[in-house]
Amino acid sequence: MVVRITYHCNQEILEWQWASDSEIMPYPYFTSCYLIDGLLIDSGAPGGENDFREFVKSLNHDQMIEKCFITHAHEDHAGGAHMLNKEFGIPIYTSNKTIDLLKKGNTYPEYRQIAWGSKLLPVNAELIDKPIITKSKKYKFEILPMLGHAPELVALLEIKEQWAFVADAVQPKYKMIFGKNSDIQEDISQIYQSLSDLYDITEGMDHLIIFSAGNGVMQGRDILIEKMEEIEKLHIKVHNYNKQFQEEGISGKKLIRKILKKLFGRESIISQLTQGDLSRENLIISLLKWKKNKCL
Ligand SMILES: [Zn+2]
Image (cartoon, rainbow, N blue to C red):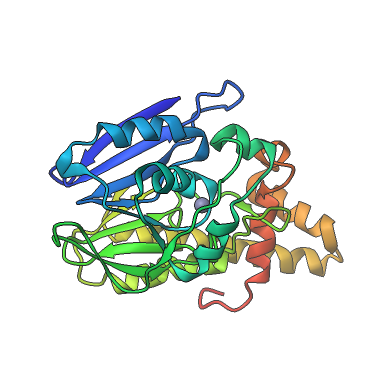
């Protein structure tokens, strides 16, 4: 297993990253959780439980976890919550849409088991719907819904410090998404709207830092504009190709395949490995469903 510990912002924020070292994986996929003044944001993956336990035991008195907040119910974020609660008695908090999902636990396809461990164990989390105050009352986190990657996903925003903990709501490149074959159903129009909401709510924050899960730390609000422009361009292209091919009498699956060829050349190898759960085709279908937009 691969574990990395990184400190940010004068050691105020500790990032714990974990990835499986399975030889089947083309490269390590990391997930992150962040510890800030006793507040742990997310809890790693089920496969990282032993490493996570060692990490929790290694914390000194000042770093001790007082509570854990889960951003959404995916296994690479909620994977350590059961152990944290059962073995360390740490209370788990989350937003209203995530509570029932955590209570049920989850099983998922083999390719996700290889990346994140065999299954998500259930945990009873408590609802929190007001700002979260940290252990020494130094920080206050507002809860901001950021739908699109998951319907229940929320980000945490520390306004005074200009920190946004966004989990999977901001991705490095929008080349493929999860679609209807998966229990992770992403919606590109909602992803766009969430980026726009975060941009609006952080107006005037000239030193915004965006902490993602596994995709690093991003500086500045401009990155949100870049992400929105990236999606807008894809949206325009997909609708233009759609119009062109429809006029040529092409429809259905053939139409999607033609757009895919124009846009990306071919489908990603990941699509095959995930039996179509995660694919470029899903992204095109989602972009086509998204009709009304100021950029069209
Ligand atoms: Zn996720």
